[in-house]
Length: 82
Ligand SMILES: [Ca+2]
Ligand SMILES: [Ca+2]
Image 1 (spheres, rainbow, N blue to C red):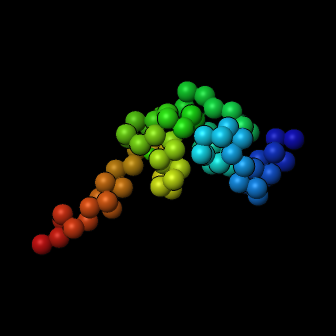
Image 2: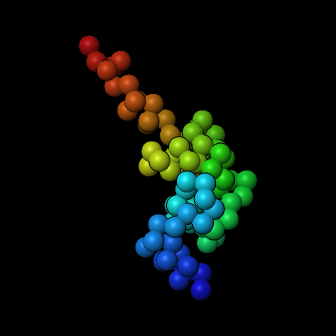
């Protein structure tokens, strides 16, 4: 049943929690069935401590379990040009 639930979340882009993060994304990075949150997977949580909460990571397409230092460089590339 778990696999069927995960597939449904993927196909329908469900947001069971209603916090702006799709179930499939929560399943992908935090496991479970994507319909609940915990101290790591809530929208305002920042489990990797990079200063971006999970909702921001979801919207930006970054990884919530890996600190995103790359996005700092992508944000202001002109600073490093001559
Ligand atoms: Ca983060
Ligand atoms: Ca991150």
